[in-house]
Structures are given as structure tokens and as C-alpha cells.
Length: 362
Ligand code: KG4
Ligand code: ZN
Image (cartoon, rainbow, N blue to C red; front, side, top):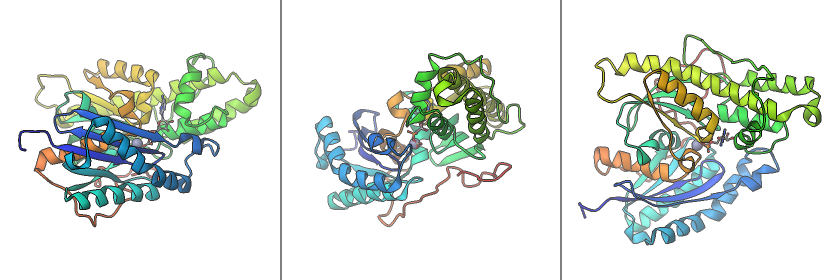
């Protein structure tokens, strides 16, 4: 028993994907299944919590079955059960955690309550060999944060958004331009046919003496440009998409550069043998243009850039199973009690000082 890998089943249901994955402590990905609800939310232009919770409830058993079949395993082969316990839409989180707890209780196996953000934060270590500490740019639909990752449960936040997250800016701007939901992939596709140089958009907080972000002004600026250029029917949407993508990428690169300096001061006093690593995680990390801009900035600052494969960037259950396995490695069987309550808000660094301004995101 001790020599064989620990096999973890992970469940993710905090937003609009119902996902189940089976991962070994030796990093074997036995299965990584996902059922997207995107079609059900697309007509509303965003995620509707009640629709999401119902869809999770209807799909979760099917997705878990699919994962077991893909892996060629049965429930008796699973050593531990993990689920996203927050932050996220509480209805979906409740479906995932209750399911994981029920199976864990029935099978008398440990249960792991996982922070969704920690799933994103540690996902790069599932597919790349990265040592702690590293610098993380977490960019998703709900979060935009720069953090030093010192180990599981050990985070130091350098910056966060004062208003919208980067993915939220993509989604809201795509909606304004009539490009559909989710906005990030739609804008990336449109931007490939456009020229970023023809429409000037501001870079909020570029050059600021801290690592925080602000994206809501960009949305207003884009809406104004669109109006000036004749609205959705007449404006050059491809150019607008390219300008928006370039502006977001530029802001992410500028703030990341600031954080790289800070990280070097905090963690790299004795020059390490291998270059420090900047990891990008979260749905926006799937964007090729942003990847290229950040790779360039990282290289200029002596950092190696690591990005998980696209399927591990957007929401998935492999990262949830892996985050639980990271903890299992660290402390032995450090599982959670069944009375662990879901947390709609769950910051990675609970001691982080808030950014200047209002509307602070965890
Ligand atoms: O991590 P994720 O799947 O879910 C959250 O936890 O939020 O991230 C979803 C976000 C959405 O805002 C979506 O528009 C954005 O990631 N996204 C992208 C791309 N693919 C997904 N943004 C820019 N370019 C993409 N290719
Ligand atoms: Zn996410």
C-alpha cells in the first residue's frame, strides 16, 4: 500500500463547469472529465447561479462515473475524495462538497476541502517541475492576483484587482461588442484578425508603485470608443478586440514586472542555481497573446515562464485533486472534517493588506 501512489478523486463545481478528475500522487492523470454549462448561460451573457446549481446537481454523478470509466477504476480504488469548498457560487460548491463527503463517508476514506484558488495556484506543479517559492499571476473570471507561493497554504499576496478581474473585463467587453460569452476566447479569436495599433486604449495603473490592478476603466473606455466609431454594426470590432487584448496584456505584464522585482527582493537574496519561475494560472492564462507578452517580460527580468496546458488553466477538477495531494504529501493524511463549511470567500493570503480604493476582491 505504502509504495503505490495515493489516488485522489477531485470535484470542481464552483462556477459553470461540473468536473471530476482522478490523479495519482505520482502525477498520473487517470481522468480529467468536464461537463460545461456554457450553453445554458450563454443566452444570459453570464453565469446565472440558480441555473448553475441545478445543472451541477443533474450532472455530477454522470461526470464522476465518466471519470471512473476513463480511468478504468472503481470507487474502491480511490484513496481520498476532494472538492472545491470555495470561493465561488455557494449553490454549486454545496453540490460538490456534499457529493465528495457522502462518497468519502460511505467508503470510509478521507475528505479534502480545497480552496479553488489554491487549485489554480498549484496546478502548474502537476505538469511542470517547479520548486517553491515561485511567483504566481492568477488571472481568471473572478480574480486577478499576484502572489508569492512558498508552499501549500503559504501565500504572500503582492497585488489584487481594485475592481474587475481581467477575465471579467474580457467577458464584459465581449458582451458590449456583441461577441458572446465567454468573452476571453471570443476576443482572442476576433483580435487575430485585428490591428492593436489603430485604436488607443489607456493602460490603467501602468507604472504605479504597487502591484495592484484596475480593469473597470478599460471597459468604460472601450464602450466609449465603440460608440464613437458607430456602434456594433459599424465599428471595426476586430481592431477594438485587438486593442483591448493588448491593453490587458500590457497591464498584466507591467504589474507582473513590478512583482518580479518585489519577489526577487523577498526570496532571491542568495542567487539560486536555477532561474526563478513566474507561473500564470486561471482561465485568462489560456490566451496565447498574453502568454507571449508575459514570456517576453519574464525573460527580460530573468524569470522562466510556466503555464499549465489550456485544459488545466480554465476550471477543472485535476487541479482540485492535485491541490489535495500536495497537502497530503506535505503533512501525511491531513484531511478535513465532514463539518468543514463551504466558504463563498476564501483568500489565499488572509493577512494581505488591501489595495488603495474600494470594492476589494479576496
Ligand atoms: O479560471 P476560469 O475558467 O474560471 C474562473 O475561476 O473564473 O476563468 C474563466 C475566465 C473567463 O473570464 C474567460 O473569459 C477567461 O477566463 N478566458 C480567457 C480565455 N479563455 C478563458 N480570457 C482570455 N483569453 C482566453 N483565451
Ligand atoms: Zn477558476
